[in-house]
Image (cartoon, rainbow, N blue to C red; front, side, top):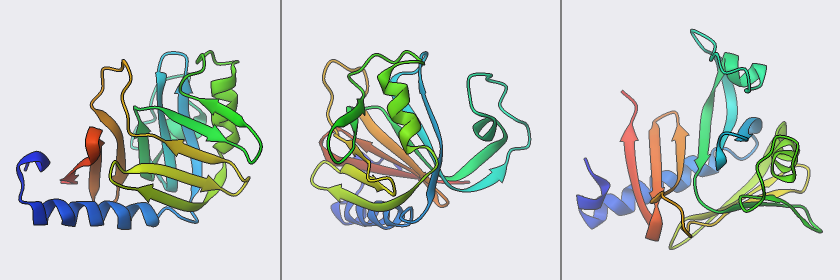
Length: 175
């Protein structure tokens, strides 16, 4: 069912489901981060329990863990994002994505960290994910000269949530 054509009550229910699922990642480890050369500023986080894949992914640019395991939760970010420490901007989608550059170094700073809190702000469903090392991943649901209308997608055990511009949320259950 297309989320943009469902009744308002159903949309409210989907929004509540998303918030509940996002709160479930508190305490979980962000053990895999994919980003850098070849992905532009789009990044993918692997969070929570690991499940051995039937066949490892063959991409040699991925870490061994990401090639061999799938995660309970995933977060693909396709909108402006930033990683902050308590005193500075560590990394952001606006930075060059060279594998030896500041964007990738910032992504490395959140890999292996446990999530201590998740704040989802309405009406656009912007996210702030705080990590044990005091860094925060800040996600702004916006589009500035980007070809995406999806801001982020969040994979959870029940299915996938898609957060689009202007706070439009849809859900597709796993089969």
